[in-house]
Length: 237
Length: 77
Image 1 (spheres, each protein chain N blue to C red):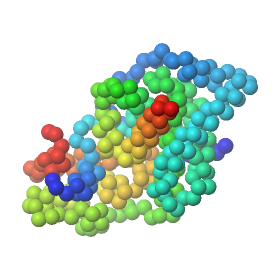
Image 2: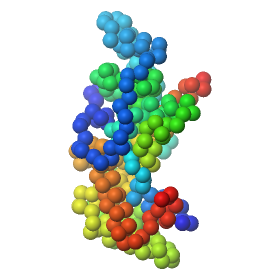
Image 3: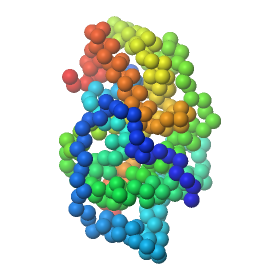
């Protein structure tokens, strides 16, 4: 089996974040019979445990193949063998993650639902990385061409033009260089967050925190300028 | 706004207006959220900030869509 190559969110302590909407930790729930059986078998010894691990791997492989089948059509350069390879690696790595985190299972869902998310994450991350293999990740924004390259251009409505112009200035002058690079890569150039995390040797959680901070700064700046983002985006205030 | 592509692009740029959880909490709570959704319960009230995060994070959104589809498909069999 290959070694785990994906940082499962939550595995590495994240930087302090103001993203933390309070989500009450769930007390351990009464486990359903099937979940109890899974935990019992996986914590047993010898042949019973080996058999449970084999069943778990089969479950994870099914989930990983499901993800590959969903995303594969959008990745025409990956052939059937490549997708199967991704699915197998994802199942292997998910198995390592699940076995290492059995004590984290709180019974808030069925055991099978809980383990599926590990396989789906591993497969999705691997597919994103494969689809960007060998491609340059644009990090240095040419701010004057930002919006046109992303298909955003002001039309003849004065309010939209003013908003886009102010936004462009804010990206250039209000954000830190790191926030600007991350925002441009993720939100304008469509670089997958896992690909950028790998290139910058960081985690998805840390990058999303940077993106979140950049977005908050832009919103605050637009508000200071008296521009109503909510009205233009059709958001409720 | 009558330009959906512009609205979409600005949404990507500015993210959700509402408070949101981060990627770590999203992953931690995703299985519970999906099961609440499939049970017809108010998943957004039970796990505040997760829906906003899914709106702001394409990677977590894809993984939510996949988990929802996989579990729903299994239960329909």
